[in-house]
Length: 161
Image (cartoon, rainbow, N blue to C red; front, top):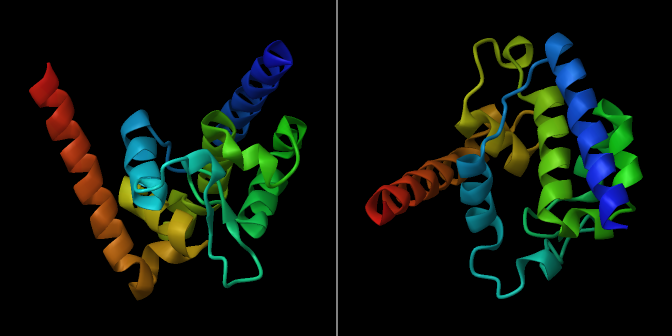
């Protein structure tokens, strides 16, 4: 099972690399993922089991709080993601969620859509607010908190060296 999951993730990354040549979205790095996870489920004791937006019809699941429409958009961008498992269980894994988030970024956080090279904050705001989150005033505070988390994480890493 572990071997097949690893193989599926490798295939997804390879297909994202190929599609990235035609539609390059913001490329998340480890620091981005860490800052987003802290923002989404940082206070949760078991972030992989977290369920958010309970008052909405599309609840958010897992460490990055991914909804079904977000997942569906990512799968439309990269159909091989569907081989990782079914929603919502698939988004309870960090690696699966990160592959889903990258596909979503490749679809929506692009230079062509934004009109300039996309930033980590653009990608974070799209993650939070949907395809046009990068320009939605309702995601401005989320973007600022993302940058703050990222800076704090960098400071901690530098201090621990």
